[in-house]
Length: 67
Image 1 (tube, rainbow, N blue to C red):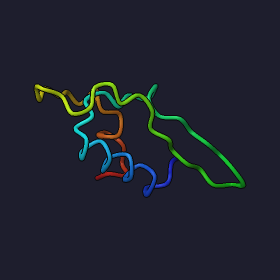
Image 2: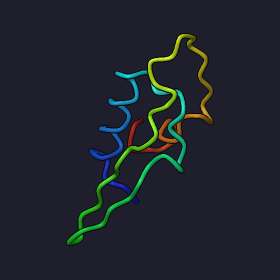
Image 3: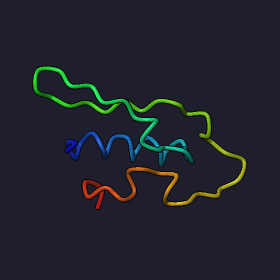
């Protein structure tokens, strides 16, 4: 449903800033002229003082585009 490059961009951003909360409510979808763009929002749990992540906290971890 989403272009692999858009999912990969969010995954790379989240890995760089150690975002611990990228659920589907924190991704906006923009469709313009037949193109789909994913826009990450809400970076409140980035650069944490503790590293504790669960797969359900990161929406893109289960998406086939990042396999």
